[in-house]
Image 1 (cartoon, rainbow, N blue to C red):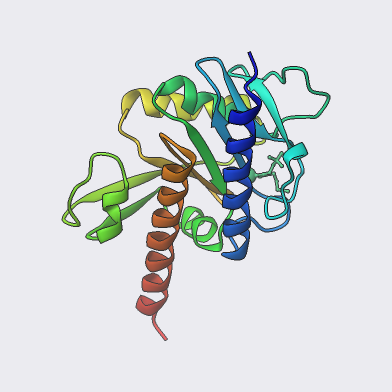
Image 2 (cartoon, protein in one colour):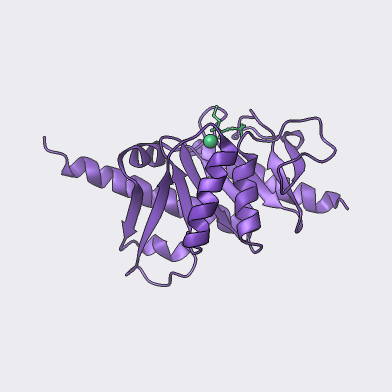
Length: 207
Ligand SMILES: CSCCC(=O)C(=O)COP(=O)(O)O
Ligand SMILES: [Zn+2]
């Protein structure tokens, strides 16, 4: 059963996240996609091809967790199955956000995993309560076959259930949280730490 107040609130928080991410340069052009869980079987997700800094209420549709739109003529995000995978993996996830930043794009072209250690902002990630911690954010090879890519992500997350986020090489970050706000904070924390890693690697380059 649809709850118009719930849908309006979730779409407004996702619209605000999109504006912020676009101001930061993390969702250029039509890159990125956002979703929020509605219940155990459905999510609200951005339609494919929208500018994520200029989202309107009409740019969202409801889809089931197989990625099938419900009562909508609009096409859901091309990457909908990646959102479905996270919601199916963890019933506590309430929102999934995907960004295309310079830092996540460049780091993921260079490394098979992005090692983050000693950052205060690690405390935004699940299960971490001190800066004296380390996390490897896995990097998956990009694939235009999203069903195959989501199966690869799922196989990894079954082996490493505490995976806090992941990056697709040369493409972008997927992060999530219990609420849209928590997913947004995690994107902000991860993008900050990625930017630090990128700038540090430039400092280390021989002149
Ligand atoms: C033009 S960006 C390429 C597609 C992509 O990576 C993305 O995040 C946006 O796809 P969507 O279908 O969700 O608009
Ligand atoms: Zn993308």
